[in-house]
Length: 637
Image (cartoon, one colour):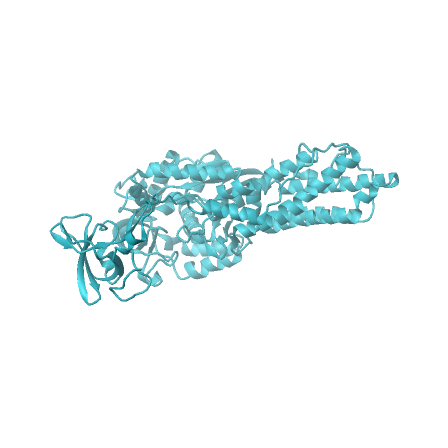
């Protein structure tokens, strides 16, 4: 067994089901973990879920269920997505796990006992989605500087962590360890924007909600997100201050935390300072990866631009999704995804370039040599260049994968794929097959192609494990090690290939986009149409536009609103049963459509002089209004 290697994702927040942008991180981390295992290292890969906090408590209350029941549901969805994407995690931690809860209580108590945590009072602005406190000067246009959402004025008793005590020590550590934060640009951001201006003490408990780990010696407080969530990286290894445990002693410090760039501050400032206070080593590296955007926008349900992993997998397969995520995300800049770009990449790289190479090679070995690969050592032009490209790719990928340049590593593999396809065109096996004299050369050409495909399959193992296995099966290789692909020519002569089968079927772009559009267009059930009526019946209705000059709820009625409408030069009073769906003030000044020639009738002691028209839909009613501010009293014809 090689070196120990401990790698983690950030734990996913259980406020909602994750979309493909959230899912990128775990696929990225899995590729790194699989690569290190392929090298022969002793890997421990941790992922999991962050399950406490005010935001979750509020969502659960809205749904009418207990917070634990809510997070159980979301955590299961997150785990299912990881399993669906073939993620090879060694442990999946939940911050509601009992061992984690008990360890966090002890960590909080230790920091309090040694004077690093103290009780005081917090007064400031709180952003619930980000679970962050802000001062007045930190707000941007009166809103959260991180997410731009509304903040609430908050005042409550809280415990605080003495961040400033460790500030200078952390700055020195970062400067003495230049590889601690990746990419380099983010390291400068942390030092210049947060550390050097001075750290404020950090709020680490709350009393305004109770969905969290209780502070054992002060039960009205719950441990706030930072100590709870961040400590998962050590509690998952069995750490508590009294007994660090065998796994902790073996794997800590982490070799790398893989996290999103938006939570870099918490992992490179808060977390290292907590570890310093606990007297524990710091992680060796923190890599803040970029975001996966939909086109040019961050994914958001409210924008309607969310793509989910299971939809992509259902349409394109697991490894196609893994390939796109890993290939389309630059090292330090945001990547993007749309269905159009996904299909284009699928057809060009997977179906045409990789799939075609494997299919053509296996088919030719079956056609010309009854499926037997044999190196007759009939070397010729272009052989050495193919071999050199294979060997160079292996060296380049070793370097790129240890500096987290994952997309660049896939580019190196595709250099081999492209070179092998070019080698087919250069050597023209179909011409060599026409003469017995050139059959030995043909045999060596096909051997070289099969060997380059074996190298490609080995290199693809961390990124596209199912595809790598399918390729190896087609070329008749049962097992493969990293050492075996480092030397070109280790494929045994006499190997019998399998049947040629497409790895990725080419997609009809227009048909697939239409299928996706139809699938994602909501199916709306409408009320059945009424029987035909005569036009003369319609003409009997006098439908008018009225401008709302007053609107109020009718006393003692839950349903009725009383409208005063301006209709030309007169006013008219109408009652309408839409109080549950409209606030009176939002209708004042609007033009509504009403039937003017119904006989007046009494409702709750008021005379109603007509009927306001409303549209009925799944969630209720809405008053019909006009697009333009037209003259009140206008007739609808």
